[in-house]
Amino acid sequence: MTPNSVREWHEKLLSEIERLADPAYREGSLMVAPTAQRVHGIRTPDNRRLARTWRRAHRETDPELVLSLVESLWNAESRDERALGLEILYLHPDIVRDLAPARFDRWRLDIDNWGVCDFVGTRILGPWVEADSVSRLAYLEELVGDPHLYSRRLGLVASVHLNRNGTEFGEWTLKQVDRLIDERDPMITKAISWSLRQMTRHQSSIVEAYVETRADRMAALPRREVRNKLRTGRKSGRSD
Image 1 (tube, one colour):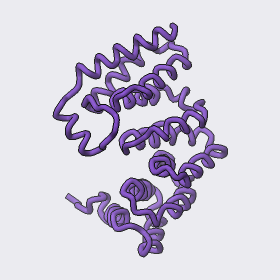
Image 2 (image 1 turned 90 degrees about the vertical axis):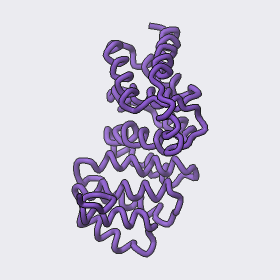
Image 3 (image 1 turned 90 degrees about the horizontal axis):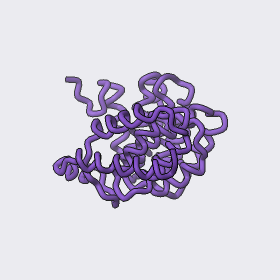
Image 4 (image 1 turned 135 degrees about the vertical axis):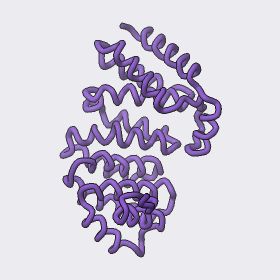
């Protein structure tokens, strides 16, 4: 396998993206998650199947070539290619664990929509931090304090992965929410809501107490959604 292989893989994957593109889905996707990138309109299940198919056909591929393909797709003109590259990377957890922070630093400044941000945060960055939380939590803290909007969101939504199975990162998460609680940009207030709602799975009483003590500072959306989640199990508050 050579760098030429990476170009060939990318070209074939792009042709599949174009074949699977759905114009109607494209329009709806752009309304929900606007981006400056081109959008072909491939649906998420199709994108994931495409990633799994590539993974099965290239199980013995050198990790550096896999990363070269991921980078090629990341740097392409369309959001669909970028998303496919992330799906392929997610299927290589051993590669994810060994990523260098510099790679995240390059990627995060390219992000201009919540869809890509949340995939990187919950499925790549979160597992990366979990693999060595003692040394890597500090990187998330840097992101939460960064001037770049999507970097701050990225640092917080990574906690959604960290809090999925227990209480180890609960106190840390609340400290990061505290750092962002006065912001009113929807990208941050929605991330706060998501992060706290994830915590309710294992730490509902702690989250309830936190929301009550911060009610006067927290934006209306996360305050409402988290209270709904605590009361009904759903952010909408509907129990049916």
